[in-house]
Amino acid sequence: MTRPHVHSAAAHRQARSDFSAKRRATIVGALVNLPLALIKVLVGVIGHSQALIADGVHSAADLLSDAVVLGAVQMGMQQADHDHPYGHARMETAATSLVSLFLLITAGALAYDGIRHLATDAPSTPPTLLALAVAVLSLVLKEGLFWYTLRVARKAKSQLIEANAWHHRSDALSSIAALVAIGGSMLGYAALDALGAILIGLMLAFIGIRYGWQSFRELVDTGLKADRIQVVREQIATVPGVRHMRRLRTRTMGGHDAFADVGVFVDPYVSLTEAHRISEAITSRLVRHVDEIADICVHIEPDGHADSDAAHALPLREQILPELERAWQDLPAADGIQRVTLHYLDDVIEVEVQLPLARVPFHERDQAAFDAIAREISPIAEIRLLYAAPQRTQRHE
Image 1 (tube, rainbow, N blue to C red):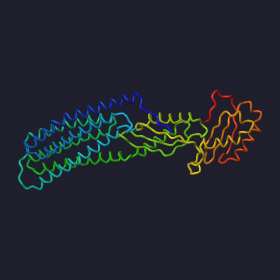
Image 2 (image 1 turned 90 degrees about the vertical axis):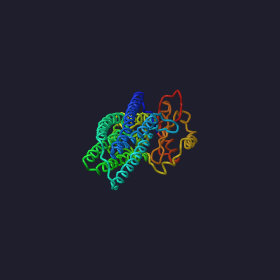
Image 3 (image 1 turned 90 degrees about the horizontal axis):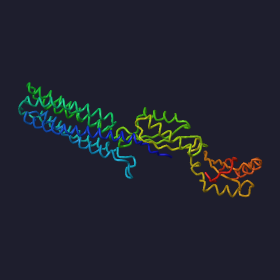
Image 4 (image 1 turned 30 degrees about the horizontal axis):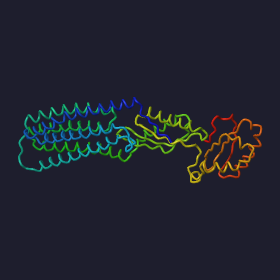
């Protein structure tokens, strides 16, 4: 099983660049939201506009979410450690859940207050022209902030920053609602102001539920969508040496990145180093061609090896080799054995014995003797004799 480190220096530089962009976008958002929230609430109170006060509360919620986002982005950039072997990308996911919760709480408060005002029969003072002007200013600023933050989010592939961008868009939409409500109330339709506050609350609730559900799915290790998993399968299948695969599993993290693990079947007679090279090729191909894959754990399996209780009960080298050595210790070829290789196939073991070239003339006699041993020892299915020049370092594999 291999778990290669796939983050190159270039990938690290890109991550740092994305981090800087995300932090800058969040700070810009905070610098806009702080004065805007204060102005809208203050002017809403002075200008007698329930909708503008609701819009100001919305901007205050934006400011709170900016603080959460900034902290999560900072923590999410930390490298993997002993306690967080997959890194800290889930910090962004947790923060997205928290931002969604803020949105839902704010939505409930605004909707409740709007309904309460609708139920009140007391006459209300119409909003002032100043309230209308502030609503227009808010619309322009928040729409511009939305497009700027969304561009950063898509470039950095950050679900958290995108959620914050849509939070800005919701504030722009709430400013439109406030603008219509204020204008209508000034024209004599007093109920429009309270209705505007309720509408803003509903918009906030929709966005909160949307991103809250996405972050929840990620926190419970939801995998990639079926079409993306199919792309991963196709890329693995194109790697030379891969016969087929099983148990391809993925889990998303940080809104875009995904981690995967897969069992890949290869020729049971390839060397360990070749099998490892195939796993490296799989990792390299997926990281290059599947944007979401940040890391993959490849489990190499021999094609034809049964996944059964009998196969799992086969003896290990330390258990079966001493028995084989006792069986062939008196054979003429025993002293020349250079290497013994075991192949575990289905519920049997095939054995390769490497002898020096000097034993080639005695092949038929030696093979017959080893065949007799294979028939006597279970679960040995076959003993094949191979011949090679002596090795400088003799070892068992």
